[in-house]
Image (cartoon, rainbow, N blue to C red; front, side, top):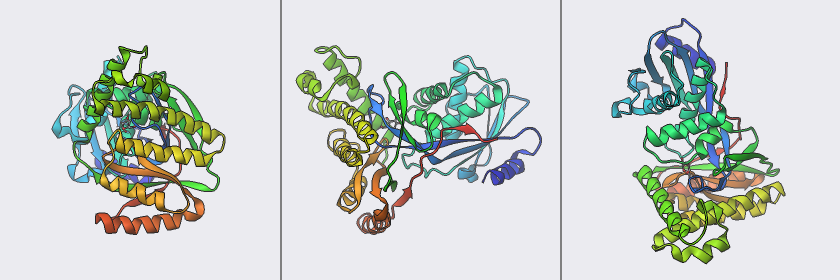
Length: 388
Ligand code: GLA
């Protein structure tokens, strides 16, 4: 694949100069959903699918971008003097946002770049194609210009650019997973302190299976930002009666004791999810370390119920997939993963049940919804890197 992309790069941008290649993965979150902007824990892992870049420094300040995924758009040109978001910049707002964020931190880009991008994360699937493109750009800039930034910095810069250049108020999970992923491990990250630990995902006789519902409901970003605002208001209400910095500081019992301070029943549900989900993530990682995959699966199921009923970020198609998984033999746990309102589910399925899982859920989903779902039996890969 690398060779093919390099050949395409040369065809489009010419073959002189030093051409380098890079990769940043997508992610799947196993548990700890909508906790990362509430000071809680998350437990994502990097995938082996992601976004590739072939890049070369220029001698002027031009930026030339080409995406193999959007061939009809052709080469999209800009310059380093124009690092402002715009509609016509389309997907290039992601790399440009990261360049803008680097410059904002004092890392002045000495020259422009030619960049060819190819991603094999299904579009709009909630497996973090945009975060992978941000982290990828960070790795390109660090490598090309020798900036002294750590991979954690690259994740933070990616999140900053998404928040302030691209208008989605996301947390740190996706960029962190893409930058810091480790083969066969998930990352147990405390989003309040950014302390993290790698936990081996050893499922012995089971596999992680992602199902892409192939639906993405509109208003995802605004609904996401609404949830975030509701949690912030609930936190302020709770802070009047209890000394906490984030919702992640509360145990379930503490939340129950103080929840009456929250003035609105919808906000009570949102905050309840944030508190309980954080505790579930902590318990799930403990269970995994003790090889108790059954408990891990039960916590995943409870996570889904909470995201569906209290946080209200699921949708009909996703609930169909999760209900079908729960009914299928050999399924240890199943839930929605990512921001919600469509996208993917993640399930842990016994090895000998995977084929049956895919065929029965595949055909029933098609009957009920009218289009096919896609299934990926997942490998956990390493974080973003220079390929050569
Ligand atoms: C999106 C955001 C993340 C996180 C998840 C929900 O993926 O980008 O920061 O909030 O939703 O857990």
